Amino acid sequence: MVTVYGRSDCAQCTATKRTLEIKEVEHVYLDVEQFPDACAYLRSLGHQQLPVVIAGPAHWSGFRPDLIVTLAVHSR
Image (cartoon, rainbow, N blue to C red; front, side, top):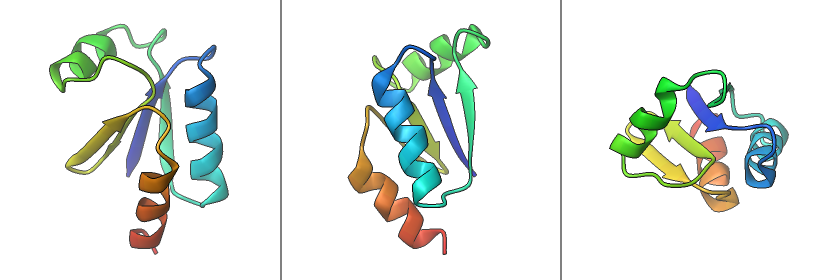
């Protein structure tokens, strides 16, 4: 399962969600404004910007369509 941490006013978060949906990658979206403890967790992973995508042991921040395509290929 893929988890995306973002917030509503984040263009890169919206683009990430949209691309995951287009590529049919199953995911859960969590708004960090509704889960305040999430920010500390994401910082502990070394991330300073949103969105943060966690896919098993892999994780990254920012809009990364190249990595989303890789997820889509490996999830089929």
